Length: 383
Image (cartoon, rainbow, N blue to C red; front, side, top):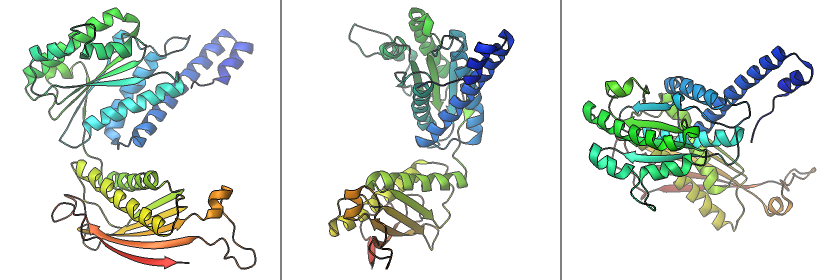
């Protein structure tokens, strides 16, 4: 964890006070830029596809928040209370609002651990507001006893250690008056808590998600962001990346590549798309494991190459898998065995081409739900 700034060190040793100040400011801005870039890398790895508009709007607020947290020359991360960070994500069902909050928390924690300290945390405390009244909400917010697990207690456990707590208010109702009453009740609880931990007054981030726009009073005090599904190209890239990542994780293969040879329909609800690549990667991993068992191989494959094609726009998907198994010499020697210099065949890997024909994913095809029966598999062995 941490970072280095050689320019400031040089100015400290040989430069004027003005040069040192300029070098420190330049270094600080570079750190903020590096932290922001690292944050979005971790969001993408969550995985989450952040649209350009979301990155721009939330990114500006995040950059300001990180800058305020680095104000202490002695180091550490302590945003001031007056720099409260909150955002309101709204959009249709399945567009990724709650997923973004989860990705936000994980990415922020990774960023703080990378640049500030290995022990830094960013914990999410989630409260679903649908069906609640201000009175019933108040009962679950406040500390009721020494061993209770109220929302206030959960926040306190994080804030008292100097870490960041993300209070996620999800499923905020449509009614504007009820919205304002519920959010106001939560803010009053947070304000009471932070009076006991004033040095960490900026360590609570309020993240709100709803299918509806924020009420006027809420919108004036937060950053409101419309969340929409990614573009068709972004969805296509996301699916390819997740198929590769999931297949590699399941098989422990050294290399995995996936080629998607047809156009996916643009989805406004990302949940069926997630179900599609999750189910498909599972089927492909199972075929690879079946082949390994049939050939008595326990080592992870060297390489898996998958080609997905469809003659009817995804109604039925043909999956061709080429699996290259590791040989015993590879496992024992810890590396690849080179081919014989005279004939070039001694190190030739065992390769299998597997063809699967299966139904497309729910709502990505024109008929029925996913059916695991009737999968056709053809095998073509290569020496």
